[in-house]
Image (cartoon, rainbow, N blue to C red; front, side, top):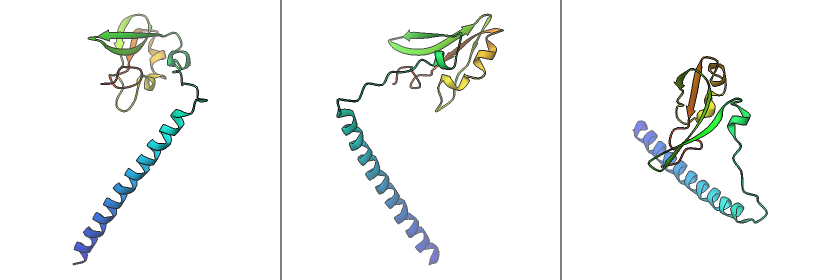
Length: 120
């Protein structure tokens, strides 16, 4: 009997949590629309990560079937491809990538849907 009441309570709390989360999301979307409509806001520009994290690298945009894949490339020698995991971007390699340029041509792309690569 107590176990049944416990599960009913958990169910009610779960439904309540989902309802509250949906209301908060809707409220934040409403605020976002209001913020975007204000004319005094300047559009945000993307800061180049090569200037910040990858000194000596260059930005490369690769187009395959009309889809842009962004990458940074640096160093010389045998090619070495560094791929990030989810939900990361190429910036996760900022500490290791520059150290590998002494022996390798390091290619660090943003996978599709991440960073500056096209989204599906």
